[in-house]
Image (cartoon, rainbow, N blue to C red; front, side, top):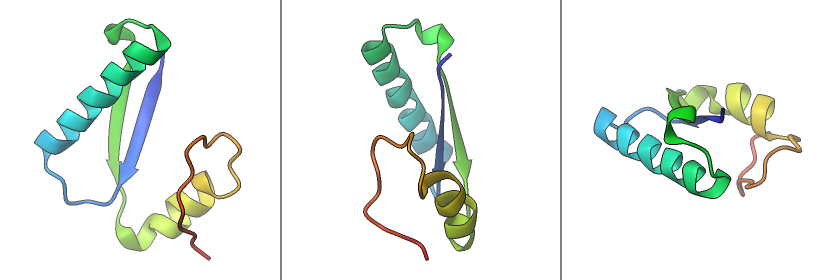
Amino acid sequence: MPHVTVKLWPGRNDEIKSNLADKIANIIVEELKVDIGDVSVAIEEVNQCDWGEHVYKKEIKNNKNIFFKPDYEYK
């Protein structure tokens, strides 16, 4: 606890993804006052052509648990 999954389009190398995961984990530690050993961060690549159907419509659109919402929309 806690676990965060970041979904993004392919194209970033492992160093960039590792740096991002490290920064996210450290912010979680700071804000939630938990031990770093209790935090996990996953990064999943989703092809751009699949984003609307597999991510936006299933996980973002109409999700009341999203606290920072995007300003785009897939129809």
